Structure formats: C-alpha cells, structure tokens
Length: 156
Image (cartoon, rainbow, N blue to C red; front, side, top):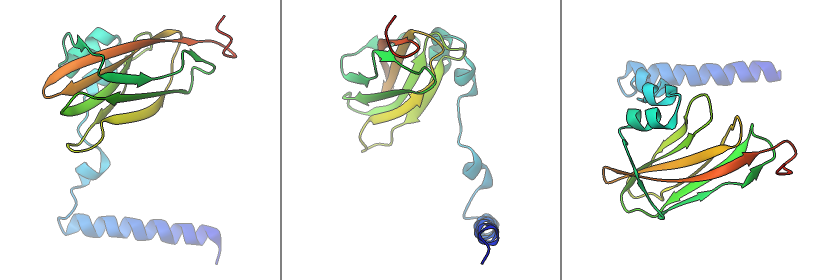
C-alpha cells in the first residue's frame, strides 16, 4: 500500500472519530482546539505589564524556587530553562524574559498532587534577566537569573 494513502486513511480516521465524539456531546470542539489563555499577559511588552496582566503585582522573592539555566547561552534561539517550586500548593509556573519583545515566554498550570517542575526552551534576543514566577495558594513568588547571550558561547 502506498505510504501517502496510509497517511490519508490514518488522518481521515482521526477526523471521523473527532466528529463522532463531538456529535455525541462527549467532546466540546472549542475545548479541544484551545484552552483559555491570558492574551493580555502574553502580549505584554515588559515584565511589569506581564506581572500586572497575570495578577501578580509585586511578587515576593523566594529561595524555594530553583531555576536551572546556563550562565552563557551559545545560541539565543534555543536556551534550555527549567524551574522547580518547593512552595506548597504551587498552582502555576511562568517564565518571563526582561529584554524580549514580549516578556511572558511560557506559562504552565500545575495540577494538584503533581510535581511542581517544568522545563522548556526559550528564545533570548540578547543578554537579559530571566524571571520565574510561581503562583502558590493564591500568592506570587519570583526568582531571576541573568543569562548572557553570545555568539559561540565565549562570554565576550
């Protein structure tokens, strides 16, 4: 059987199942395509505006947030960052980047009873502070780290 035909049949089967579940009322199409997201926060041009849009205001600094990121990024297009919250009742973790065109790079909801640790890759336009914002029990906490972006990772 031709590989293209297999791909078409596989895609058609998935679409048929999706339509069947939606028709039976077991799947709400708008929930399947996009969850609620804070468009204003993701459009914010600086960290303060992003914090305000998230409802964080002036978060407290915390040593209970562990951020893992390189001191020097060889390639600003793909910088690995990770955060772990030791704060009980962590509800969300977000990464904010001070000197990027839009400050909020990523936001993760943490379901109750799960480990409060996330990792992703972000794009850094230049050497900048990367902030990790944690929401726990309705309060906000933050930590930050400066990451230098250089060509070749020489730190110069």
